[in-house]
Image (cartoon, rainbow, N blue to C red):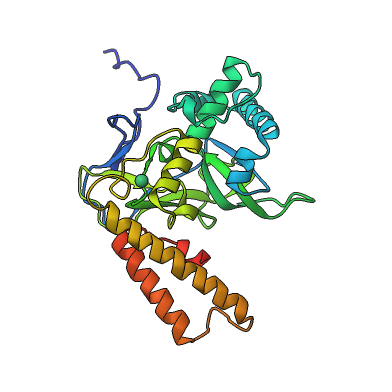
Length: 293
Ligand SMILES: [Zn+2]
């Protein structure tokens, strides 16, 4: 008796926590398929592409465009030569031409790759190396493009957050990268709700207009999240303005008191931090951003 035909390739793994459907006006996105609890890890993933930088994400995009264009092109070409399966995965990712910085003469192919890269790249402030490279830091900022995680859409009031976890072991040796990217729920996410992250965490306290301009310029879309559009906007604007003021006061206090340390018990500092935590919780932006204040 003949055996049934062997499939050419294994079926794709079943994603337990999320699906990647098309979402109106947003290309693709991620939706919870069951209740996700606050703190739950939704996804862990290795990058398809990784590009280390020595500058902030903004500087990399805006001030080093010629070099950026060359480096993105080189990285994609190297992927094409080295790992065709991963290259094909990259080529299937959504592209928003408006997310591409205005560039000098480029071939259509180069422009498309640049656009795909900037539509999907997530910036991580610190990605470590497994093997030290002479003359290079042990860890540095990097843009990473991921097959699923890169499809997560933005909200100025996100319900999830992305981080680089250097303690996780990559499933395959990739580009001397130590660790993997993780996506965690920041609050309970009911089944069916879209999973969202913030693309511009450093700007979380900025007023809506400024956030929307940045998102439009850098990622090419108009944000219609609950903090940008609808009845919550006035309260959101007040809360973020107060967060900006408190953050500034904390920085000024630190400068005026050089002896200040993280263990300082000054009532003024503690009160300000508690108020900021309360506002951030109410505003739905409780994240590691407080650490950087
Ligand atoms: Zn928004």
